[in-house]
Image (cartoon, rainbow, N blue to C red; front, side, top):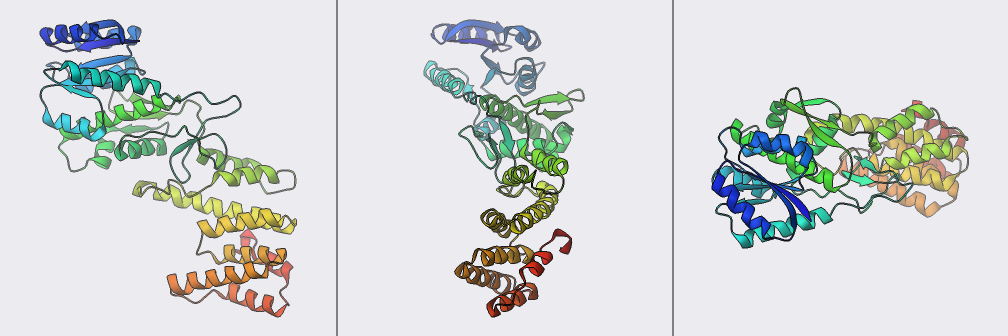
Length: 394
């Protein structure tokens, strides 16, 4: 059962919609307003489940009202009602938001109510006790509960634009991002009025996705309504946990090795690697450099401690993430050699040779060819090789 709020500056339109909704068993309480300012004030206390909102009103348009209503009642769904503004309807189509055209038809309204009911039932269940929900940014944008793992509690984006804008706000989390900045980033070629409409709809879409994902992060209006701030409200990020963990743990030792392995497992792929976001490239490269140094030191420590299976796994991950680093290939060759797996050494060497010569069109680095030649001759000094793998060596 739901509570509804109707907002339309036309009294007859409000009366007609109210009559239609009262005939539906899904609603237990209905409020109707012709003044959007009164409705926004009332929403602070009434907290309706759904708000039916007209787009074209004389004092404040529906998109601006929707933004203020979301601040007043964040858990409310909004259905737009319009008989005008074709460009706005196009925006709703693009962002897959609910809207109803005037004159409202009973059958069409029933479909919208069914969609809203289903959407409210889609709110994700709480995680089991002991599971900490975390936003993952390594690889793909997702929700996860353990290092390197994803859960069924993934974000359900309705458009790629909403996903990218959330990622952008997450990139600048806890900081003010102006509306002008967002328009310039996402709709630089559109007229300001139309771009603003797309911006309002996309922010609304993100808020709905966050609500359905059952996490406490929120987008709040900032600086007098001139922009937004994404507040995480204590929800951890894998990228922050990764970087902070490395800094706090310090160098790898026997006592903290397991913690370092957990930190390493967080880095499943590069920062937002699944998306071609140019604005993320600087942070992506910065985190790649941190991961290369950390994983190289960890893998070498495991190799020296004779934990060969773990060392091999780390070096394989390094060669996947940093395929053009000769030191990562050397580390994996060394690990296979210490395992006594001659076939794996030969295969890895052949792969590295093909990578450098065919893909990069350069000779195989002498560091690899010299080691392989000595190893085949049976006189490779493993200790010397380990020295060449130390982080300060590269």
